[in-house]
Image (cartoon, rainbow, N blue to C red; front, side, top):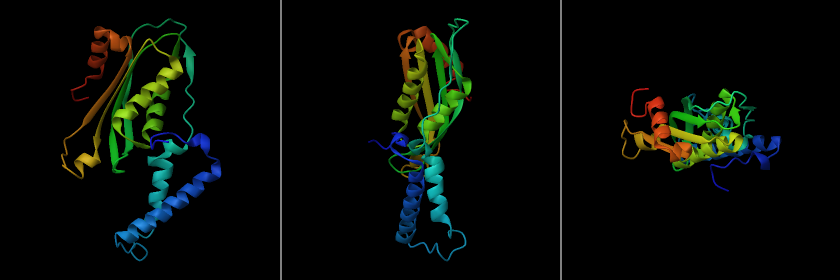
Length: 207
């Protein structure tokens, strides 16, 4: 099972306590291997516990918690115009180095028979990103979740983010960003619709 899958369906509530305990033990071993005297240092004394809590309950919570319920509604007014949601906060963990990924996401929808509650777009992004990810696959997962929920006539997802594995280590290029996109349906097939979406999100601008 890939590291960016959600495994919540395979867990019972008590498993989270076991996982957090195991991660804390691993953090102890890591600090010991780094020769950090965490047991005696006031700054790092509780670091293993804090680190485990952060990973299990926050940074990787999307791996261990069930996907959000996506409340959707009938398109009673027969809305047929493009709408865009964003920027939405992106917070994730690089699957290669377990360093932070932070950025923004935009989602464009040409609705069909169903529309999605506005806050649910943010919940999908948060849940998908809160697990070890590579940005290219995360963008596809966001699109898959929305497409499955409302089957729009057109769908676009753009994610733009900075990766600490680029800015903090390695080449240390502090200005580097990565932009990924997924276009489906009419937003893939119709250049005018795609252009409208890109203009609305101002990709390449300061927004």
